[in-house]
Image 1 (spheres, one colour):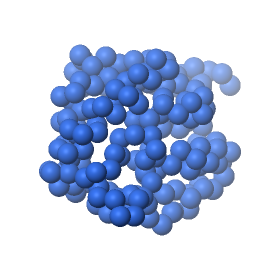
Image 2: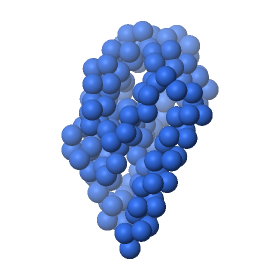
Image 3: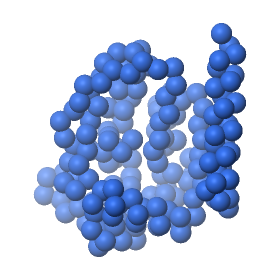
Amino acid sequence: MDMYYKSLPEGIDPLNYNFDEPKAIDIKGILKDLKSIMKYEKFYSPQYDFKLHKSLKKVERKIRTNLIIFEGIFLFYFKELREKLNYKIYLEATDEEIFKRRLKRDLKKRGSKLEFVKNQLERFVFLGNYKYVERYKKYSDLIVPANLSIKEKKKIILDELKKILLKYLNED
């Protein structure tokens, strides 16, 4: 879902903008593109620049697949999106895990400055996690508990995906 962030509104300082609430996501674009993918039609995938906080030129894509793995923090929040998903896995995370993952991802992969990441975490991330993410996990088919190691979490998810794929393959 990361590529579906809306551009930062003009004149707004990124330090004062909450990227961790659903209004920051282009849900209409996600639903439109998901519909196209499910019909094997071409679509225009957005590109997002996390340094500029801006949606860039869209890239034409066409994907022909029977399996779509969709990842993002607001998957369960948007009713119209979660109703299109056949199987939903929720990966629990402690505040400490969220902090470590966000810090690592935003500094290394997104090129964010430490001040920005800490500001977002303190002002928006943890509250947003409770308000828009954690309370919607009830809509998942599988909840992977936070108290497990990463290795154990990966095993649970992979085992579950194997079961789903085997079931799908045996339906034909």
